[in-house]
Image (cartoon, rainbow, N blue to C red; front, side, top):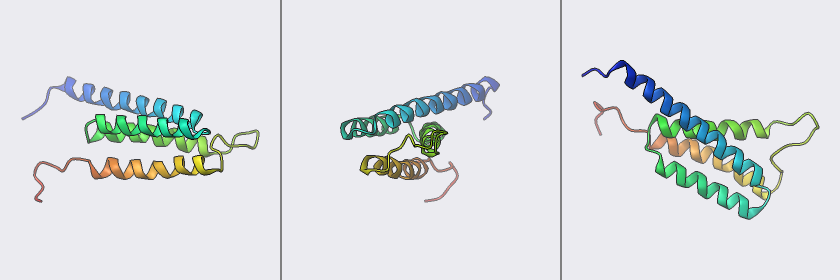
Length: 116
């Protein structure tokens, strides 16, 4: 069964939208992570979005955006400082990135012809 040509464009648009949501969520977490309450709320919002987004390329798009903005924030700025602090909150935020990637990959649906 073939899909209409417009369906592929809609799917690509949804993935790009999820990438933008991941970028926005990741940026918000990076900006508030210096306070423990901000970090906890940011990680809770990230987890809630991760659960709400169905598995597959949409969830992977969200995680890719979140991790991309975190990677950008981890690079030193021209002034010589970092957006991520080298404290407990900063390291917890960095530790959340591989966890999100693993969750996105593990919950990726199997191909329809795969055997258990």
